[in-house]
Each structure stands twice: as structure tokens, then as C-alpha cells.
Image 1 (cartoon, one colour):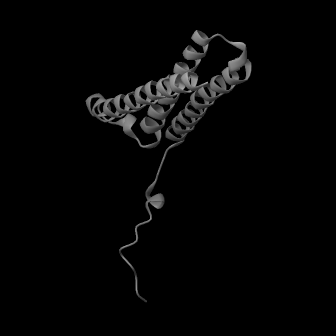
Image 2: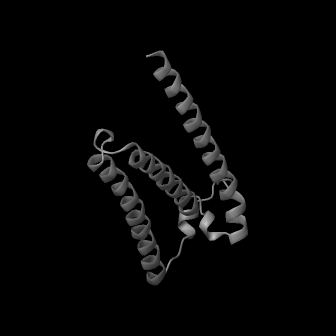
Length: 125
């Protein structure tokens, strides 16, 4: 019989004690709660503050709030699911800060160009 040695089943080597299992389950519930709370806040703001019912200043604050919550949620997902949260603080910052700055730069370009397009449409009316 030919035995393959190139396939490794890592799940067979996972030996967790009950205490480690409780910590893992607690972390899963914490991650679920945090992501659910952020998503719930985003949905509730969208439901209770439609654009037609708020001022322009409030709408701008709501849009920036969505952007900030989305960036926070994305960073948290990267920290937890890509195991970046287990790394040293400097490495986390070295990876997350450029991405966050790049996302904010893209948002800045998007908002700036959208205002120019809006001004052009208003001019043409």
C-alpha cells in the first residue's frame, strides 16, 4: 500500500483543553457581537435618517460616519480573521495604516469629484 506523505491533516494535531476551547468560543462571540453592533448601527442610521429628512450638514456627517464605521469594520476583520491581531503592534500598524490612508485618499477623491460633478449638473440645469 502506498502512503502519501505530502498531505498533512493539521486538524488532527489540534489538541485544545476545555479552557482553551472556552477562550476560543468567547472570542468568536466577541467578534460576532462587535461586527453585528457596527452593522446594526449602520442599518439603523440608514432607516431612521433618510436623506430627505435631514439637513445637508447632517447628511455629510452621516456619510462620513458610514465611511469611518466601514473602515473600522474592515480593519477589525483583517485583525481577527487574517490573524493580524496576534502580531506585534508595530507590524499591525505597518500593514493597516497605509491601507487606511489609501482608503481615505480614495474617499477624498470620490467626494471631491462628486462635488464637481454635482456643481456641473447644477450649472447645466
